[in-house]
Image (tube, rainbow, N blue to C red; front, side, top):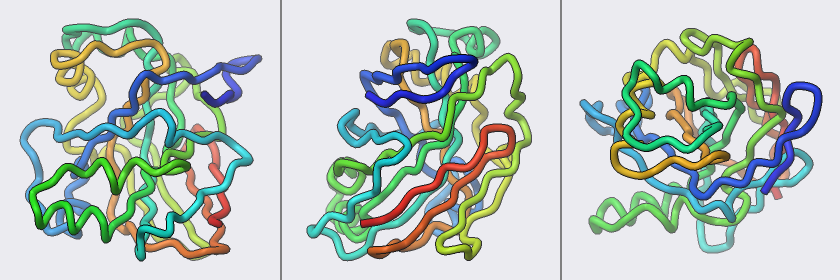
Length: 218
């Protein structure tokens, strides 16, 4: 659970699951040497990987390369099952920034062996969110700048308009498979430019209209 500013108070985000899309930006799919999917490809990150403002990212000893991925995150506001795309936004509370931290070497090994990605995505501190939840009523997400710097150097820069599959269709697809509960998080994919992190790095990730998520790497 994390507490994030929302409207004039705080909202306690207690996701039963964190659902993250893979390859939802064309250029990122290319840099991962993958095809662009025709329908959502997603994986789960455990709620235990979630951290809020003020908590650092901890690099696991098990991995030799850990990468950053900045993503627009959708916070679900009410129970959603079998929701059509045209009604999907009625089930959204708001939006925040999520960093899908990934042990890239462990992911590559899993891909080679045809194994799931859970190990590479699921370490503690591998799902930072913040700095706040932007109310869906005050923020249109169709074309927002999204980017990330490490130690002041630009790594990722894109726009949410570059998503292959848009948020309503993502919610429709996922809710046809599993019930979405209030507080659940959907991370909608990352633009190109993912790269490695090391001890002592300082991350600044931003999405237009939401703010800047700052994280230190330990």
